[in-house]
Each structure stands twice: as C-alpha cells, then as structure tokens.
Length: 353
Image (cartoon, rainbow, N blue to C red; front, top):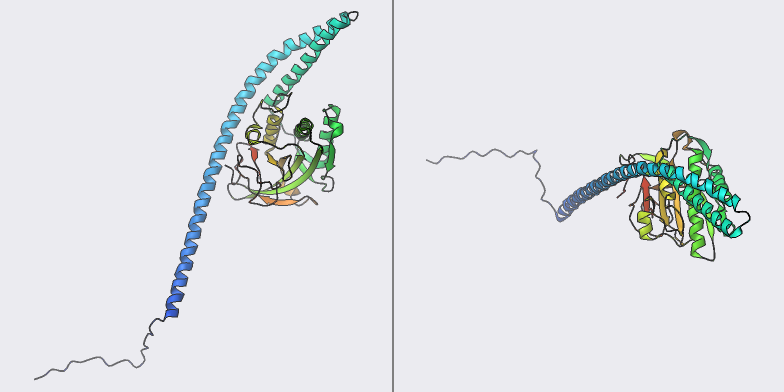
C-alpha cells in the first residue's frame, strides 16, 4: 500500500525573486566602493586632525617653556641693568666735568668726549634691557593704524636712523582707515623697532633700490578649537636681502642680532609687546626678495565689520620653522609662508608646529 506525500499548494500571489544581473552586481560594487572610499577619507581626516592637535600641543609647550625662560632671563637682566646704571651715571657725569675742565687742551678733551659717547651707548643698552625685562601694562584704545605708523616713522626720523633719507617709503595703509584696539605707545614702539631693522638691513646690503612698504592687512585665523578669530596686521616689508633660515629660527631670541651695532633686543621687545596684546608677530621672505614682518592684533567684535578697504584673508598658522614658499603673507589659507611665528603661551594656533 503506497502512501501519498502531501505538498503545499503553490501560492498564486507569491512573486518569484529575479536573479541578480551583472548590472545589479556592478551597482552593488559601486555602492560598496563609495562607502569604503568615504570611510577611508574620514580615516585620513581623523589622522590629520590628530597630527594637527599633536603639533599644536608641541607648539604650546614650546611657547610656555620659552616664556618661562624669557621671564627668568628678564629678571636677571633687570637686576644687572640696575647695578650697571648707577655707576654709569657717575661715569657720564665725571666725563662731562672732565671735558669742561679740558677746554684748553683739545686732544685730551676728545678723549673725554669718547668716554661720554661710549657711556651714552652703554646707557642705551641698559635701557633696552630694562625695557625688555619690565612688565608691559597694556592700556587699549581704538587707534587708527595710520596714526601708529606716523608715530613710528617720526620716531625713526627723530632718532636719526642712518640712511633714512635714502629710503623710499610706500604707504598703502592710509586708504583703509582701519582702527584696532591697542596701546598706541607700545604699538608704536614695536613698529618703530621693525622699521628700524628694515632700514638698517637695506642700508647694510647696499642694494640699489631701497623701498619700505607699509600696509594694513586683515586675517581670519582658526584656533585649536576650530573657532575663527579676526586679526588686523601691520605689515612692514623691505627690499633688502631677506631672512636666512638661521635668522628666522633665532630672530626673536634676546641678544641675537645680525647688525654691526645693536643689543639684539629689538625683536625680543616686539615679541613681548605683542604677547601683552594677545597678538603675534610673523616674519617671512617676500615673493620678490626682501623681508616682511607683520604685527597682528586681535580685533574686537564691535570692529570686525568696520575695516573698509583692508585686504581680507583666511589663514592657518604655519610652522615656525618651515621654509618660505615665496608667496606673500595672507594670500591663501594653505600656502602662507609664515616662516617665523612668535605667539603667547596661552594662544594655540591651528597648524603651528
């Protein structure tokens, strides 16, 4: 006796799944590759972000250590300077008295004059040391950039900077009418030091064309938290020989100088002034030769949109030890030759190495 096997009756409403075609497989592979590519891109972005944050942390630690060294050096220098200034005043006084007593002896009087001149030079060194070591108390007020540059140029001319009359000065700052919150006295002192260095570099290089260009430039900088901060820069560019890699590496160090005469404290003082303002000083070699140094001041929120005529750029802070690419400061976000950057210890700038 045979038994019949019961099979379920086919459902007439059921649909048969069509087999995958080569086109379907190609579409699936394309979607898979697209997702994989996006994951790879995200992975690379995360790796880049980790590397950037690592560089920023290194920069912050280096700046903190630098500030501690400068503070200790400043205290020591101030003590020495005060000890030197007291006897130096006596030397100057007695030399002048001796000069007056030797009015009938011209040869000996010239020797007394040399003592007075040397004492005056040494007193200037002591003054620079005390300026470098003192604490800067910033009294900010809204000041036009053109006024700061006028004061700095007048100071250089009044001090009789050698070769002043052989320099062609190009003013590109007047058309902007830009203002920025800063301490006018300290800012003028910083710009004066920059201009003096530029003039001396051009005079010593004996180049045929000596041009000093002054300009106001606006920047937008990304900090380590990704926030955008607005800066207004005072740029001083010269047609001199430019900056070597060694100079770019050491130019903000106290007592470092390439001049025939000088204390080597000019740019160190500039650094301290900018640090007190919460800003930074940036140096680069120009596209057509020469050097450009820019003092960048934070712009208050109320004045962010009150800078007509000032070139506006986006930038990320580049490495303080990279070689100049020959592009002018502020052209693009990725290709700025910010070859020497000095910032305060509490300011972490995006991309700083």
